[in-house]
Image (tube, rainbow, N blue to C red):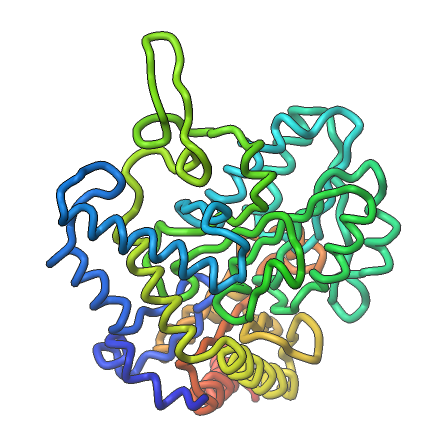
Length: 404
């Protein structure tokens, strides 16, 4: 895949022709195909779903449900019943925590996460553990900054009820061994939840080949709108999941004293859904399918490895994570320059990177730093942009430190 061959699909790069956008792990830019799909919805199909018998609303409902089927194909789920629309990864994980594990985790049980988790896949489990008297355990990283699978084998036990791990670290950019962790969790009778926020935009996902129990991901990190996400759960788990939110459209019948809920997934989708977001997500997934996820993965890996190698060759620059790159996420620091100052300098050069703890504070502490710079690359980025970042870092070192 050639970045330049698809870059013209993204109107923002025409509007901001000098911008180098390296903050894709926070959110991705949107191709015209997705923008047009949203515009077409509001222009021609702006009707509520699952409510009315008139033809126009029925057509919109068909479009909405077609998106659910497209997601089934995208992650190879068994059924559309296993796909629940949410507001994003954070919302999906909270729904799982409050709708399922709040009643299935008890005192003496253990929940296992990695030290590299995003706060969205840590705080809900801290809360459940505290409220229910369970124990939260952490899988460490090995010397190569990968998840320590040998340690995981010692930590995950018959007391473990849930293993909750990210597929791709939003700081280190490495891919966790989800296959092995799934096998390990199931050997001990535990479920496994995968935070797919950084994986879904870049990697092929097959929830039957690797039979994880739960998956959460966000649309806006894969070129869809903000405020839309997916909760995948095995059907038997979803059928035993409470509805944390109740209200319109998730009920079969209501009396003055009680109510009966619909079948999954609808009973987990109370209220008017984010129809625009679902339509946009459908377009984004169709766009990714057209590009082929294997090509997307190869492009992101190539860019990530190139940038890692270039940064790692610079004096006075510390790059975090494995030397063998698997994604487009590269975190680093420049000696004697605070990450916020560095990001401000790069901003003056029209280079957008993120500075901070990246919602992964325990990992930041483990790395022994207060914050890092993060350049996260995606399919529309280029080698030339990577070279420009390196050149600007050399300029920055001279500006702040008086030497190259």
